[in-house]
Length: 460
Image 1 (cartoon, rainbow, N blue to C red):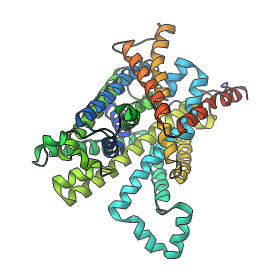
Image 2: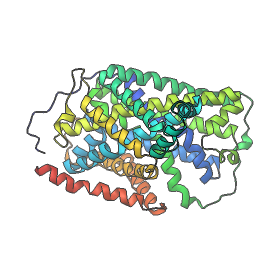
Image 3: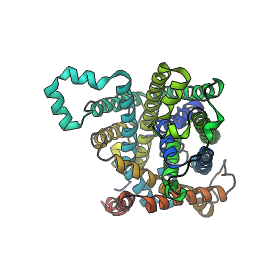
Image 4: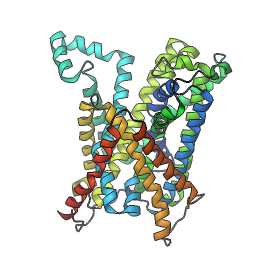
């Protein structure tokens, strides 16, 4: 699609330091820290080694944050990863990422997190049984045939996505303010879990004892690291709103680095608290560790409190994910690589068309998410292909464009971006080699199909 028409107005710079950190931490801390530890405990048998893997995952993400900070400061516009790929590898690679991100990655991610919210809301207040009784036995049977046993969940998730999208079309000040509030609540809640675990006399260092390994480490390391990196995922999303951050050259380095360090510290503290309270064998019997921990610390009300915390955490992550996802589509449309109307700015100075487009696609994914759940999880690894390419962009631009004004340079260059890129490649290769199905290869095929789509688009 030719880019001859004048681009729409840019989004105003209204996001301060705390608003941007709220978005970074808000996207990162969702349902993963509550669900992933139990899955990892079933694969690995040494708590100390598990904590080491969490630390290594955090260091890898910090290396990525340092690399991306250099790019975001040089190109402080909306789009984040899309923007970095555009300048590092050109329009075609940026297009492939952008169309996959709009059609698949972000809708599955936002819809998936929102479904966790709906599940915990249902568990907390018994929503599904109440609705079954309200509509009657005959209508319930019809709805279950159409939408599954928990038929109320997809409509509830769609309502949530619509409400959060509407909030974000009103204005970025309101959206970032809500993100700061929700992020503050869940950060304080996670800190409280960690502190209570070590203050109250309910734990023991004996819980850090190892168990016999069921499988060799090299057969499960890819799945374990995928879970850890998925839980950390979100640290890069703040780049999507770089075009709206005030004083970006000064603030973006602080936002990326401090925000990522905060997430790493919280995850290490919470995982250590889990192991202090719950033996590894008991941890393997559940899907969510936090309720078990709080039940031992505070009884039944503590378990219910965790459900409320998970609600707030997933609500905040869904909200922040909606903010960042639409900015990628907005930037791509501004570059003439998507329909121009998706790059328009509303009277309230928000990318309203991109937001509602994302909402519709997310709702469509929600309706099919149950049958495509494994595909969505497999697709997470393909993000690391683009993460690695974006880090390589730091090296490419240092060579091709040494004249660019770099007010922040990635420390440890070229080792830091190089290690991150190699780690990203290793994650992709290990996932393909250890996968029990062909989903990773199928998703790579879908990504590669984006290149002929780009060449058709570029000539229309």
